[in-house]
Image (cartoon, rainbow, N blue to C red):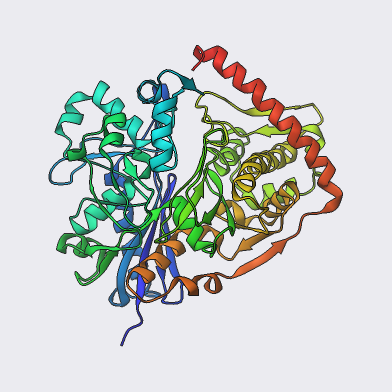
Length: 514
């Protein structure tokens, strides 16, 4: 009898990864397909769902053609996907326009209107914020980057699309619709609509009061299913396109943050993981619901049934590195660039990278703040530029760490680094030095989300239990913080926070105070 495997997809912003995951959570084979992103005026950021599906079909065909993994061994499909996007579909499930992805801030004016009121706290109407926090655990982003902002923007600026929409779906949930024919969202993926009561983690449901606050039409939202559940079997059309059987079952999957937390093996409470992808985050599962409005962090429903995930996000991490390396230096030979950066002393001879290229979400939600290099001199060269980016992202991670640990009520014992950026031993060591915590480099860190999706599929199908997961994710190397650099990075962190204040004030000056 063939071994049972999961076909796992990691739908990122810059590309799609597909992997066949064994019954013991090992990556059997994988394939990567790049994806285009359209950046539009006034904060627009779009991708077409048809490109996502075409990439999935292409990746699956490549996997089966090599013969390392076999299509007849696949018993399930699961997806880890970019979170905070909006796909408007008609009754047949066909997208009416390109998706507004998590970077799209065109709904900022509408989000500020929906969330404002008197008396105000940090721009939020106090009574509205209280209702959101009490029921959901968080509040809508005033930047407009959440689906509630996207939908409000469509309603105001593309009314024909809004009226024609049968349903608005997260990217993950649109893919599941394409696979199964069912338009559903899981307890974890629906959160950024800010219309669900999450107080009972096992019975998340839409709330009439929250629907009124968000001005969302319940008839245009998907049905809800528990995290870690099975959505259904593949349709014939989907099975044919992917070269699989209709007996293959589709798990509910997860958002990228949630999938990374699982793929990193950090499924126990208070066990932290750091993702170094296009964006970045530092998260941990917790047994409680809690909100830190000041730091734009909250414990929200996790992909693990019965648990919450303390969520935050740094908008630009490896995305900034790509801009500097490929856009400014015209180089894509990252190993050589890292080797050069390793020759530069910690502290980068006074050069600092401020990573706020597309605004920021946590610990301050501001779509207008912008970054760049500070302290650049004639004595700096390419090596300094690259190392400065690595250190700047780590300093922003330390900012997240400060607030995360305060909310957890304890220091992180260690941090597991995942994502494409975690392949760099230099970046892992820099993170350890800046955070002052051991950093564990996960094996094959770029496949963490796909592995997490595979684990979700295995558990949903009853082929694995959550207690098995930690032992199934190998650690390649652990990096200890070096005591001789503690004072240096303590001082640079304080300067980093001051630079944010200056840049934020400048951003407000040029955008009229938003």
